Length: 298
Image 1 (cartoon, rainbow, N blue to C red):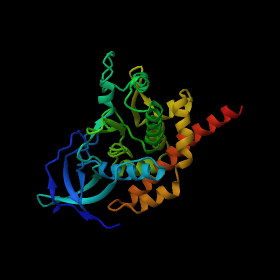
Image 2: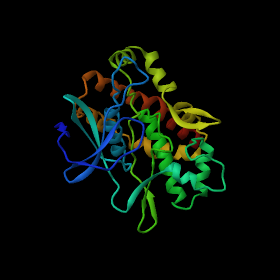
Image 3: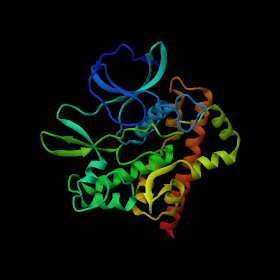
């Protein structure tokens, strides 16, 4: 895949919020893109910058391969004061008269509730789905659980209420589900070469990164969920149905092709990503789906 140099592209004055790295708006092939720069690796002092641009690109490509609407992503480079940085361009799916609104904003509309818009307690989120009137509650619930299962697969620890949401048409007052965006916290973005080599060599290190970390941003009783514990418990029917919808749509050969064709990553990164994805699918999703099918057949 050709690597695009975004340095000389026309810039727009549009600004983007969010804490995960610097962002600018550029025009590429006549369309606006949000250009995301790699943030500092705050949790790993041995890394200058995290691998979140690769995580964003591969995570979104995986979402697309599963058939869930997602932002378009392109890997490239950008020259900053003589230093070349690896960046990811994310297609801007808004347009004049159509704005992006996050789930936290919808949650804040529950005026007879004391729930905080950015609070991620699962019971509050599910109750908001039922009480809101802007969207079809069934479609909203399904999107939430489809993302939960896919994020479990790619190891996304930061799907909070501010990074998924809706497109609001100011002309018609209509709301629709936005494409999935912001997958930069998936695929262990702060794993350096030493960590990757250790995980590939030591089963205990690999299992720790399947069963223990990352956790979900969603909470139950104030505690972040472990993906394996929650999904394999089969306690939530919405989650169970998403498990049955999403798992058969994960094509590991297609995902292998995505990673093989991803530019700018090392052979070690390729082996690490493929191994972790295969193991997360096998140990979390396949295991839980098998248990669910056995329970339904019994």
